[in-house]
Every structure is written in C-alpha cells, then in structure tokens.
Length: 187
Ligand SMILES: Cc1cc2nc3c(=O)[nH]c(=O)nc-3n(C[C@H](O)[C@H](O)[C@H](O)COP(=O)(O)O)c2cc1C
Image 1 (cartoon, rainbow, N blue to C red):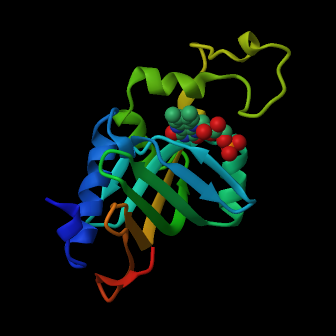
Image 2: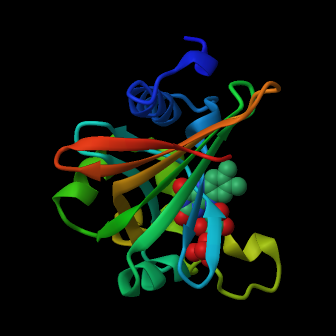
C-alpha cells in the first residue's frame, strides 16, 4: 500500500501490522523500540508481542532493573518505533502491568529462546557497580526465571507520522467505545 494514500481509517491497521512484524522478526525495524517511562527515563527494548485485538504490546525485562521499580510506581509509558525505509514513526501511549512469577510470565518464559533466557541468569542486578565488564557475566547455574518480568502495555493512544517530500502526514488515534477514533493533525 502507498502510505501517502492511506486513509485515516486504514492507519491503525497498518500500524498494527508493522508492530506485529516487529514482534515476529528480529530484523524488522519495529523490533527494537524505545520505551520511555516517568523519571524521565527511556531505553531500547525488544518488542516481544504486538496484539491488535487486545491493544497490547509486550517486552521482557529483569525484575531487579530500576525501570521495574519505576513502572510499579508510575504505569504510564510511551513506546517509540521508527521504520527508516517506510519513513514511519509510531508512538504508543498506554499503561503497563508487570508480571513476575504469574501465568503471563510463565507463558512468555516458555516462549523464550535459551539465548534470551541467559540474560536473567546474571547474579548482579542491572545497574550494579562492577570492577570490570567480565564480572557481570551470566551464571548458568542460576534460575533466570526468578528475575524474569513481563511488561505488558495496553495502548490508549497511537500517534502516526509518515514523512514525505510533498508533505508529512500525521494522525492521532484514541481508543474510544471499542474503536480507534482518529484525526489528522499537523506534523
Ligand atoms: C537492541 C537492544 C535491545 C534491548 N532489549 C532490552 C529488553 O528487551 N529488555 C530490557 O530490559 N533491556 C533491554 N535492553 C537494554 C536496555 O536498553 C537498558 O540498557 C537496560 O534495560 C537498563 O535499563 P534501565 O536502567 O532503564 O532499567 C536492550 C538494549 C538494546 C541496545
């Protein structure tokens, strides 16, 4: 589809298919968004799930990381995605819930690859002081699941920006009465 011709009604579907591709493919441009939280604070994460039906996006993190304590206090977040080939930025605003040791965490852990699980076997908490980088390697004897946390976000607002030489196009969508209600706005 030519994004320049996309109608307001078509944009949420386009955005969710780009997000689904980001969750499914390691090389997809939407695979590594920036997740911003109160603080102010922000970091790159891996997009693990993007589900249009439930308006959810998911990443995984370490229960001991500073972001988990911050998100427990203040659950409002912004996700920023950019596809340089499509020239599309998508920003998602929503609220997160944290899942540690529950059914949602167990299901995501079961779906994780061994290489991803290794990160959670580190004896040190993310952000801990170390004398040298080699002191912070994972220990295969540790149970990574104890540190594994799922950050699950329900999206309320979607901001779409498409860059084009003949004029950028931007739209903002709010979830209202079971549907995305959108308006064009100035880029
Ligand atoms: C490409 C890339 C992907 C990353 N994915 C994740 C991730 O999925 N979850 C995560 O907690 N940190 C991830 N990180 C590390 C974070 O950016 C960050 O450095 C770390 O989580 C500590 O953040 P905090 O101090 O805000 O808790 C990733 C970093 C990069 C560069």
